[in-house]
Amino acid sequence: EMKEFLLVFFALIQFVRATSFTSCPNGFDLVRDGECRGLVANLTITVDMGVNKAIEKCAEVNGQPVIIHNEEHQSYWKQQAPDTMEGFLI
Image 1: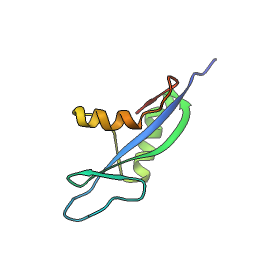
Image 2: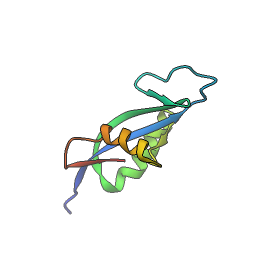
Image 3: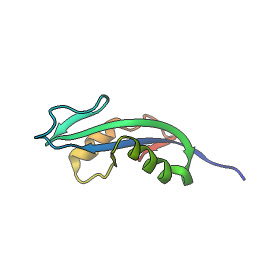
Image 4: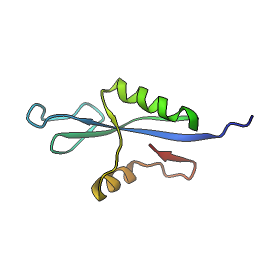
């Protein structure tokens, strides 16, 4: 069986309260309203492993997977996406 490998980028969002924290963990950007965003890992895996790896990586940093709600989110994460046709940002 031929397995198709994709370059999968795991991007995580970690939310923190602005009143409790003035900065984000190393490698994360403070975007607005206490929201920290950061790219945690670049992995080459099979598509069927994507969901489990995303959950695992999120748990490691107490984060949440990316959910794009508006144009600002789209713009931010598009800048983080790979410059290739071989992968995608999840």
